[in-house]
Length: 386
Image 1 (tube, rainbow, N blue to C red):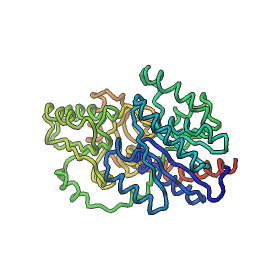
Image 2: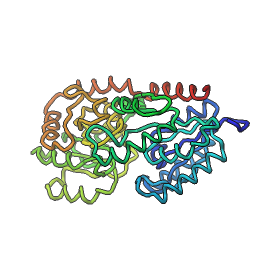
Image 3: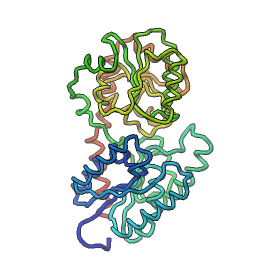
Image 4: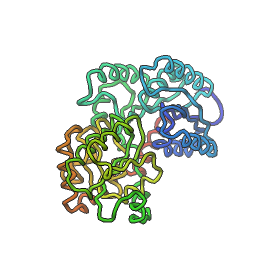
């Protein structure tokens, strides 16, 4: 780069939650390598908790990390705001002459890579982590028509394209990034999830779950993509009042899903827990994990459940199939297969779970945060020397 003094890096995503949840270790790695790190994202809209974002920005400031609010939308059709965001990011990049720009999320990735075209000619290295391409086997024609050409175009402006599941990694080989690298997800601190001490009886009592109840849990936004409806309808097919289902998350389908629960007569068996900061404890207090998601990259929620030794019933989709082998750590069904999910859930209620849990705990060693951090550090070091 042409600037003098300390090397600088920018971590950028559409929403602050993406950085808070998945990039804290990357910020730490870059700082450890001697970079002054900045963060840019929308810290207001699109985040489940604005108060959490305010606290996150304070934490960044205490670490010496500057944060910049960019009004980026998650919706790719909000062209006006995308153009505004592009201009703001371009100005930021020109002012700070970053050595590394590491971008995330579809809109954030497009905005950042277009804004860095000139900077790349001056030596800025642009990395993009695809947390799950919107074009994939089984995706709609619209998804392919909209997202694939954009990603193909932006790949020309990408020094390192990082993919986190095998399907995306194979797909990326047909794009034009200078380098195409696979890493096993964003990393899960398996030790942190396993070693937590919790009074499970007390935690269950707080949630209204009896000691003898079998508790299924899902963690994720109440959205079409997370598809909680399939799990709710599957629960309705299990005629056992001691089988309960806890959903941790908030989102646009909140009232719709609650209406469905009322309609199916499941009000005493489904707990909407809302936004939670005690996910580790909730997982330890549960018996099994249900994950009927329609679209994923490599789902952290699923990996966290597996890390604590929960067997799973999940959708047979990209990302999930990297983690779960049918009949080993759980059961796989197509996302809308209510009968299938009911069958898998019944199997878990009536079968010995410990062997499945052990399979999942062992597998998660490959996806541990230490493994991922080692790979990410190699990538950061390689672009610094090129």
